[in-house]
Structures are given as C-alpha cells and as structure tokens.
Length: 451
Image (cartoon, rainbow, N blue to C red):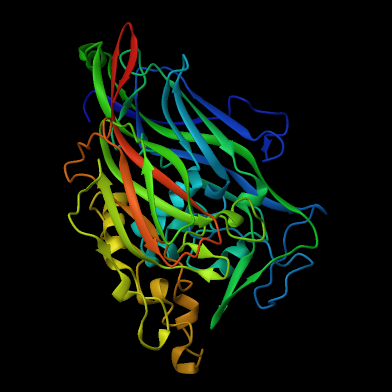
C-alpha cells in the first residue's frame, strides 16, 4: 500500500521477573505495555506467546495414560480441550490507557471464551488448525490429556471485545497514545481438572496422589503495526473517535425450577447478551471441569432447561413468545437429550451476531448418538474422529439487534425467566456477559469513553 508499511513487534512483560515464570500462586499478574508510536495496531494479530507446562508437587510432568481408567501415579490431570490449556489460565483481562483510563475489563474471561468457542468453530477446525495456537485444542479430552504430558509452546489470540472489533487501533498522539494490557491468572483448581473417557458412558480420570499446578514461562506479546508515512500521518486529524465493543460480566445464582433473574445492565448500546450456567460446586474445584457449561444440575443430576423468556421493562423482548424446547427434551426411549434448538440458535446468533455458519453442532456433540456404537472393524473411525459426545455448552441469550448499533438498557431493567427441572436442592452459578458498543473520542486534551 502506497505510503504505508507493516512491521511485526515483539514485547516482553512490563513486570518481568528473574525467572520469567508466572503461576497462580506466585506472579499471577502479567502486564504488557504498548507504547505510543505513530502507527496503528491490527488487533487481529495480537497474540500471547510462551511456554506452558503442568507440574506435580513431586516436580514431574503428568504421565496421563487414557487406556487406564484409574487415576493416580501421574495419570489423571487434564484441561478443558474446548478452550485449551492456556486460555483456561486467563481469569481477567484489563485494557487501559497509559494514564490509567479503563478501556475494557473482562472478569471470568476463560468462562466467556468457553461460552462461544464451540458455537463459532467447526469440528474440522478443532482437528486441523486450532491446535497450532495451543495443541490442547482438539475434539477429545483424552487427546489433550496426552499433550500435557509434555511442556509446549503456544501462541494464542486475546479475544476481548476491543480486540475483536476488527478495526485498526491508533496508538499515536492522534489516538490512544498507547495502552496497557493486564492479565490476572486463574487458580490452579479452576484451570486444571480431570480428563474424561467416553466408552458408552462418561467417566472422569483424576490423579489425587499429589497436588498439581500450571506455569507459564518465557512470555511475550506480538502484534502487527501499520505505519503510515510522514506525509500520511501529518494529514490525519488530531482529534476524532472510534467505536469498539467491550464485554461486561455479571454474576447471579439459579436454584429454582421457575426463576426470574433481574439485572441492571446499565449499558446504552448493548449489542447482545450471553448467559451460562455451571454448578457452584464445580467452580475452583480440581475434581471437576470448571469450564464445562451444560444444563443446570440438581443434587442428583442434570436438570434440563425447558422454557426461556427474555424481558425488557417487564415486556417480552425481542421475542413476543416463550422459547419452548420441552417437546424436544427427550427422545423416544430416553436414549439421549435432544438439542434445545429454539433456545440454542438464538444464543448462537447473540455470540456471533448472525455470522454462525461455523459451529460444532452435530448429533454426536449435541446428543451423543454415537457413544453406544461399538468400535467394530466397519466403524473404526467413529470414536477416533468424532468429538466427545454431549459437550456442546448450554448457552442462553440473544442478539439485541441486527444492525450492531445496540439497544439501551440504561432506564429499563433486563430480566430472564428460566423454567427447568431444578428441585431447589443445588445452587448453580449464572453468569451474564453483555457486549456493549462504546464510542471513544480522542483529542490533544485527552481521551473520553462514551457509551
């Protein structure tokens, strides 16, 4: 491009320590400084790079052996293969200007990623391509379990709202004038857990013989700069504005079979809402997968969601009817739980803003219809190539508009009514991720964020 050049940049953490090792128990915060330059950042190219490993308290790596169902002696330490080992470590991401003005702050970041990944990536992408950024990203839990028997290098994107806005970010004095990224690591018990075998039924393999922890080392950030020539830069205005998205997190609980959760979102331009459910006993619990987002749970097992209503100011919005999946819940002979398509499709639209031709939905991933098939000579590839069954997350939510301009919830309360088979005997964590469109104005006098 005439008058414009491109440059790849690599930067190390602002808070580097002598060993360049970051763990949940020591050095859990990682900071990167993107200094002011007469250039634009391509946010799609921002990558966190480094080395990942899991260590047992005896200072050895795991020795996971999926053919052995009994955990112990090194066998039974896994990660969530849907979002990967490294993403599981990222609990919070904050982006701010160099003078401390917050641009975006996402809590429970890995849980947000878990709500979206399988609904925006195909089975083929999990098998071919995604593993290049993190080799634990694949279709099977046992495959990830074998990967973490070694340390490995990674290069992952940071899919925050701002970095996924697909717009070049001006980091010169005629824009943001630089920014800082702060990452808070998740606890070991949140990021790690058992791995799972599937042979007709799901069984977890957990090593309880020693404690385990993860570590990130040799970290650095890379990104591409678009550098205008002096003539082009001088022609740019010294003040202006840019729009970008942010992700906000709200936490509630779900216990009753007919529950209405009221939320004060406060946003002036909310483009979509996403809700996830996970039993509270699974959070920060190394005996469970803390990112497995399925149906709510009773004390005795799964409690499928039957009906969902979305309301704004007490009125059904944007649907004038109840989203009802009750007739879809049970297949004949209760072989498997059928997909809640009316509910899941609207949630998928909210995550992708209607760009949802890529997803991992299938009879096996949704229903587990292949799990009872024997591994006979004529069906040798079914278990080998198919995703783990019944692993598509139950996600609720919707896109507020098709224009991506957003809808204001500043003066009206948002509510979601959920009818399920819960029996008031177990508490489920209910998380809400709202995507908000923000306008950032900049001038020689400073930066202002306008909702």
